[in-house]
Length: 116
Length: 113
Image 1: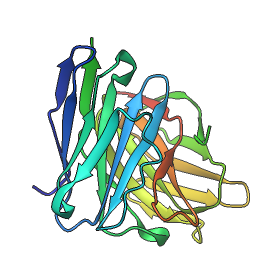
Image 2: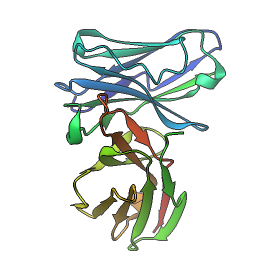
Image 3: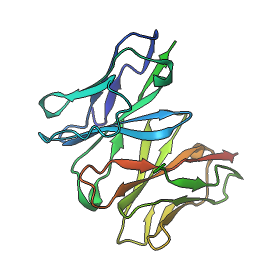
Image 4: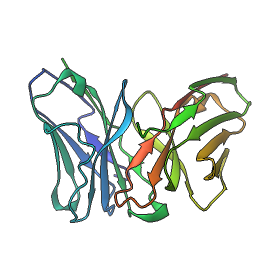
């Protein structure tokens, strides 16, 4: 596909369960980002991957959150022992390059996570 | 909070009118980007303006940037009902190796037919 894709589009889970969210970036894009959007916090950065460099995890809200990017392409965001405050839309974005003034980030449709 | 501010929070206009949204931010930037979001889902990239640019056009969109005031505006001319959405500005901080975006609080635009 031409754009960023995410799956699932919706996920309902029970408190305490683990969830995995998947992101397929645009082919050839070296940088990948996860953000989340919640009512109370707006849109906030979670984690960034660039090629083989160490990821920037500075936005992850707790150690229950982790992410991987395999082979420089697909990424999975894992939330362990989900809590109700984790309910949000999780958005993935990718960009062709990073650094400098030309970094247009293109977003996927998001995964809406609801923790009951 | 690092989050930028946008105003107005909500804007209602008639089709054919122009809509102006403003964004303020807090740090030096590499670029500023505007996004549209329909129904709380994916963000659609509208336009990117670099820190050394003052104005940029794309179709019915006009974006200005004033780095001395740390502010930007998005003008949508001759609005249409299909422009109804939330609009966000987002900045990539200068001297950042990650280019993570800091988003504004958003403006909800409603265009009545």
